[in-house]
Every structure is written in C-alpha cells, then in structure tokens.
Image (cartoon, rainbow, N blue to C red):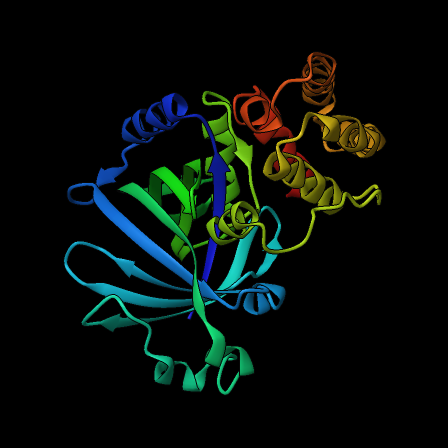
Length: 291
C-alpha cells in the first residue's frame, strides 16, 4: 500500500495547541491515546538506510506490527511513500514476510540488528475538511515522546496529517490554516531518519546550494536535524536566493519576516532545532513555496 502524509515538527506546548485547534475545527478523537514502542533494524553500516527503507517492529499494547517503509517522494508539500504491514504474535522480525517486497532476498537480511528505538504517545484525531470545493478525510496523529540510540536520547514531537480519502491537496490547506495559529516546521525528515542520525548511521547532511524550493526545504530540514549553530550561515546562503520566488508566490512579507527571524537566530548562535520548530510564519512560507 502507499500513504500520503504531511508532517509538522513543533514544541510540546504547540503540539497541545494544535490538538485544541483541530478540536475547534471538528476533528474527532479516535479512542484513548496509544503508547507506541518501535524498534528499527538494520546492518551495523546502515545498508537498508542507504537504500532509503526502514524496517521496524511496533508494540501497540494490544499486539505487534512489523512494518517496511520506503522514504518516498514529495508531491507538493506532502510525502508519498510505499508501506507494508503485517501483524505479529511477538516482538521479533519474521523475514519470510518480506518475500513480496523490495527487500526480498536482500543480502543485508542476514546481518540485521536493532539500531534505535522510538517511544512515544500518539493521540489520533480524524478531520473532515472542505475548502474551495475540495474535500479530504485526514488522520491527525499527534506524537510526543523520545528517540533512543544506545545511551543517546532526543525528543520526538510532531503532528502527522495522513490522507485517508479525498484530495491530497487539502493536506496543505489544513497545514496552512493550522500554521497561521501554531508555529511549526514542515519537516521531511522521518522518524527513522532521525533515529539513524542519533545512532550515527547515515549521510552527514551536506547542504545543496541549488536555489530551488526543494533544495531549500532539504537544507532547512537538514539544519534542523544536525542542530548545529554553525549550519545557520550555509543555510542562509540558500535561503536568500529564494526571495524572488517567495514574492512571486505571494509570500513576500512572510519571507521577509522569516528571514529576519532566521538571521537573528544565527547571530545569537541559537539551537536550530529549538528555533525552527517555534518560528512563526516558517511553515506558511514552506507551504507557499512548495505547493
């Protein structure tokens, strides 16, 4: 199967605000919050990650699910990717389930080991949204917890908007409306990529200086992932080249305001991760440039 989703990273306080915002727009709670424990598997040198696939086993409280996902590609601001899921009776991998997937007979399967875990609480809400004649049913997953790799740990706090039915373009419309009230970062870095980075496995996240909205998004998300104040200036070099495209998209004022915030954070040597997830107008600018 495939999934189309859009993800917003934010602070815990703003994640709560996002839940309140969704409630006021008619989103309906889907049962009690879930505690999800996930273990990701790969070779020690990250062979699966190098091919942009993630393999995990999830404990849901009522059972186990083995999942294989590809990294996917952007469709506008949303991410489309392939996904396979199988119920499991226990917290172990069953490699025979991969026979009809791209991992069938992959040499890495003989050398898999746990690489990192994610441990988070998920609140699920279902939203029906109609705008300018377009309709969609969207699953809103509010995730708050941690990622662990050995003794290292970092927060996990994000809202996933997944298309269940209808027009995929509505995902961006909902995110635009939400980000007008709740600061966030439109993030194309998956939980798996965050875990691999924490574990020290995978690419270094070099910034591409190509002045396109896609390269700009990748550079922005890489800056967030690396969380190194030294990365501000290389990113700003790419960012400043998008001024005219932002004005053409009708987002000139937002671009100027976000640029001032980015430059201020750079001058102060602030944490990119903390700054970007709380920066007003950033998600709106991302959506304007990518849609």
